[in-house]
Length: 469
Image (cartoon, rainbow, N blue to C red; front, side, top):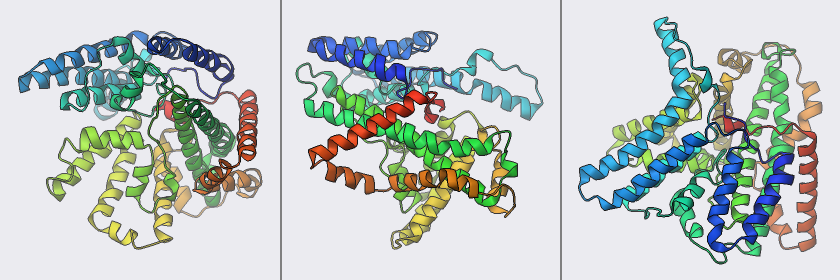
């Protein structure tokens, strides 16, 4: 798991760190803002301890120096070496900290060995899955000439450690933030600050009002006093649907909070989620879910491997590589690898023949997509204690008795309906209407903020699910 940092949905962040950070950032002169932003990001990163600060600073220094060196080299071989070295160093750090114990455990199981796991690796460096990808994308973009190398080490470090993004992304490319990082006058406007604050409030609501509340159902079913083995088939489906909604609102809400904070400081970041549960195909789903990760694999793995330019067999091989890596990226466990390969199979089926039929349908493509996405989350969650995949699949597909869903419908029915509605375009349309009426807009934001803060104060500051990936 990740080292525990300062989460956005905490009293410490909302009432201590954030007001002080924004106030200081706003009052300092323009040319000092990046230095202040870096300082604030270091404080945020070290909130749970300074243990891994040297690691991220070393990786920042390595990529910064090689980024400066790369444009000065003329020979193709030397340029490639200058690209490969920092990429390998960054990727090696990710592999070592995230996958070493998984590899040791796998060797023990396959070879009946008795290798000891490394206890100090039980704690994953905060945000390493995200900032390593930012570093790799930076070096690749400098190599291909898509961006100029950053000459100011403070500015480069501020980009990598940017506190709204360090914990769970989004994975924003340097070239997307560079214009704002080099804007020293009027980096942000009052309209940007207002829009960012509203975005943050609604993201916080998704996290604490919806994700945490709905997710309690799945947590209850996996608890030792109930246990998945004792639930009925309808309740098992209800539980995995609740987990699917929880995962979406948890991650989408946190991404929205991240983008809102960034916007308040003058950085416009791409949307990371675009109503994925209304998709009419798995292909469309992955254009809407965790967009920054999908686009990263497309730009820096799929296309460099040849994309779809070298014929269907090579395209499918490239897809296999991408989805195996996507699964592995999410966690050091076989269920994540299976989950990635599961999507490779579904996308291959769509790519070869099914997609043209899905485009002609209206209702059934949405049902098909939701069914396989929810089923996929069952594979995704199989690493949790109490949710072994064989047991879950048996409960979902072999009708069985057990604890009735009636009691849970009474407690969670309204939340599930609310979650389903908020997964559609309806809330966005309501917000578009509210923006035209100032009083309604203020009431809506104010009530949402008060409810969210009340839940934060009463809760235990649940760490976002994707912080563990």
